Length: 169
View 1 (cartoon, helix red, strand yellow):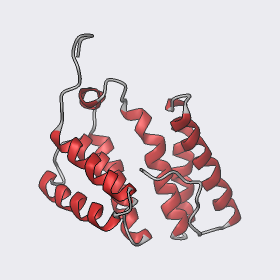
View 2 (tube, rainbow, N blue to C red; view 1 turned 90 degrees about the vertical axis):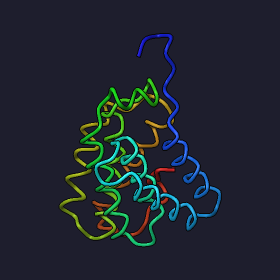
View 3 (spheres, helix red, strand yellow; view 1 turned 30 degrees about the vertical axis):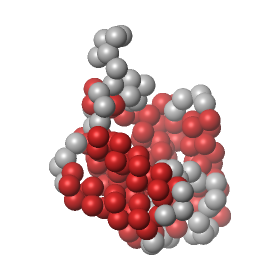
C-alpha cells in the first residue's frame, strides 16, 4: 500500500464490528449468534484476519470457560495464518506481532480459570516475551496490566474471573 492508498473497505470486518458492538451494548446473545453465523460463512480456512478477529471477540461472549478456550485457540491458530500484509490492508498500523500478546494473555487467563496451571503459565510467558511489540498507549498499558494481573492470580492459585483482564471488547 503506498502513501496515497487507503485501507480497502472490508464488509466482513464491518459485520464483525457491528456484532461486537451489539455485545458491548448489552445484547451478547444476539452478538454471539451473529458471530457464529459469520464464522460458518467464513469457514475454518477463510480469511485469517476475519477468523482471528471474529474468534477473539467470540471467545468473550461464551457462557463457559471451556467454550471460551475453544474460541481463544481458534483466534491464535488464525493469527498463525495471518500476514502483516493482510492486516495492513485493513489498517495500515496493524502488525500480527502486536496481536499476539493479547491472544496469549487470553489463553493464559482461560487456562488459569480452568485450573490448567501448566498451559496458563506457558501462555503467560509467551505474552510477556511478546509484550515489547505492544504500543506505548492505553491499549498496550491495558494488556501489560492484564499480564500482571493473570500472573498474580496464577501465583495465588486463583481460578476466579478477573475484572482486570482485558476482554476483546
